[in-house]
Image (cartoon, rainbow, N blue to C red; front, side, top):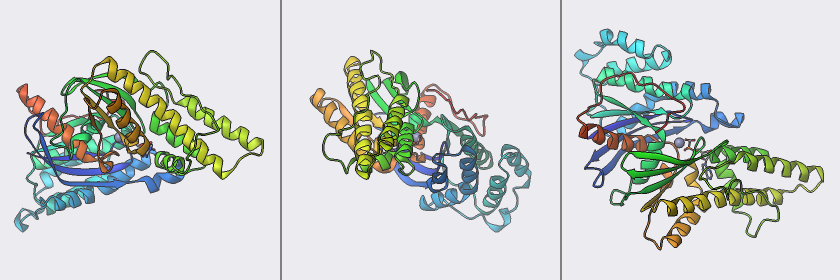
Length: 394
Ligand code: KG4
Ligand code: ZN
């Protein structure tokens, strides 16, 4: 079956079409198209994502991304002339669904008058967690398409998307249970235990700043660009020896699997202020602090992941989310997990192109949820009430 997925939870506008088949273990995903438009240049000057700007940009770009995605998937077809402009009755309902997204509503009406419904079987949309104003645009757009095309739509959890991003190009990979996922992104730092497909238990989470947020804030203190993760890791790679500056490893010895990174960011702030005050500030120190900051974060993430993996006797380990693009983190976790479990644990992580936010991972998660619904005798509906929820849980 073909699934068209929409992702607008943060500052990436993305639409993808996946051809999905098979059951859970034998599933097969073929990516027919995955278009991602990043808004990073727009938010850069603010040092972080501005929710209402993100919302405006999603509205502006969704229809052209849809055209692009459907074209690439070879699913875009012009309507025959006689069927054009017959959309007026349905438009009233469409206008209602998109009453808060007027610009998007106009663009969508034009689109629907010009092109016929594509041959897809299901629409999927991220409905949380994320920035609520941004999420709503995607949700309302998906409901409008569902209504206009008469195709069912399913809301998908963004974190489930990140977890299944590891399966996008790895159809043959074993996903055995219990599985443990370390989800690290701009808004999340979670250790999630899965005893079965779609069965999630959060065994550890962050008490304050998420790890990506900590990278972004530390980068700002060091005068580096946004987003901070790639900037810090670039600087860190220019430092080869042990760092002479020292930063704390917050909660590394706590008995639970929770995390805290806000104190680490504050430690960077005080360190930089003191070094500047005493006249010892230098370019080289930026590399050294970036290196030590990354080491501190990685020490905590790796140590807690290993402890949790051992406690729950896992068979698969999943590293995912935007921060999983970090090369050092990928290298160290792979090495340590393989060492500890003598290569008996499957280690899965997304290809770099799928580590950040994208709609392909949302389609993959939607497919698995669809299989689950079907097994229970349920089916997704056409334009149901889907609510965007910034704090959506599993
Ligand atoms: O998953 P994602 O694209 O968006 C959210 O769902 O939050 O994650 C974005 C986060 C940003 O905070 C960014 O700084 C971080 O991922 N990030 C990295 C790296 N690349 C992106 N953090 C550390 N190292 C990287 N190489
Ligand atoms: Zn994300």
